[in-house]
Amino acid sequence: MANRRKFLKGSLAAPLAGSFGAAASAGAVKRDYLRELGVKPIINAAGTYTSFTASLMLPEVIEAINYSSKFFCRLSELHDAVGKRIAELVSAEAAMVSAGAASALTLGAAACLTGSNRKFIQQIPDLTGMKSEVLIQKVHRFGYDRAIRNCGVKMVEFETAADMRRLAGPQTALALFFNDANNRGQVKDAEFAQLGKELNVPTFIDCAADAPPLENLTKYLKMGFSLVTFSGGKGIRGPQSAGLLLGRKDLIEAARLNASPNGDAIGRGMKVNKEELLGMLAAVETFMKKDHQAEWKEWERRIKVIGDSVKVDASVATEQYVPEVANHVPHLKITWDTSKIKIKYSEAAQKLRDGDPSIEVVPGSNESLNVGVWMLQPGEERIVAKRIREVLKSA
Image (cartoon, rainbow, N blue to C red; front, top):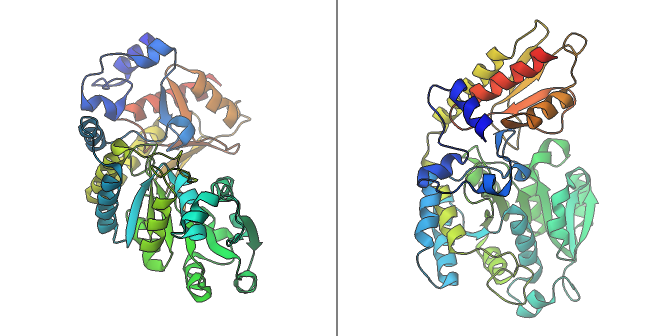
């Protein structure tokens, strides 16, 4: 930690407010818990990855959490009130706060299976006497569809609209769409939603990492999807343990019946308490009123700072890019001639990870070094720029 403080002092005109970013703004941090526990803090130049603890909660969110920690209330009453307010904000029929987007997938699927039938709610994942199939495009299969499969359903894969019409039947409970795979499937989002209406099958779209942009909070409901989920702890910057489930009133009501605090329900362990409820409400309110254009310009400024600094050799090239769907914000791609700068991209990422301060960049690429700037705290873009430059020069 001493080395980190020394690095910060030498890199910034004004020091950062400690390792806790936005959390520090809620009040002075009296204990350095990470240091006590021997856990090394990181600079997040990757993005809202759960493995890097996603985003930092906004000060408004922390204020709401602190407020809610000082009272008791009837949890279902607060659930109803918060859901109603969020639904009004995003122009949805209904809404609920879930224990993350994966929880919303399970609860939304359960709602389509059980409706308000208490016997079915207690019976899941035994689907005897119930619908049991979920339609999904083959290229839309993804790791998080496990959250749907937890309900005991069979995933029925298809490729074309004609396939979807042919496979839909009396056992079809819902049709699932993975938004990040929109351009990989033959049936695009709007057509998928309309097919669901034509076939009288509820459609559910996973948009966990797809806010921003702001318009996505209303776009897919207007498109005709029955249910939509967003992560609460990514770009919306609410509690990482929270998510949003938006959509048809009857399905949200059924999802609530399948959720905590109801006992003997598949979602009993997916607890959302008053702190997450009010924190998520504050996050949505703040997200909807913030100056997104100014925030975008700030991200581009950070990219320029890093991009200008890392050009230690004529072979180094930088490029700003914006992922088409998930994490739809400016990122920086850095490439170089590995015959001149003799270090692989994965090795450069490891050196940044092992350094002090420890820096995480976007994981998974062997063709470039990719930097996400939107989770950086003020001034950290200079630290990232300096460290990448050092890594490249030393190679």
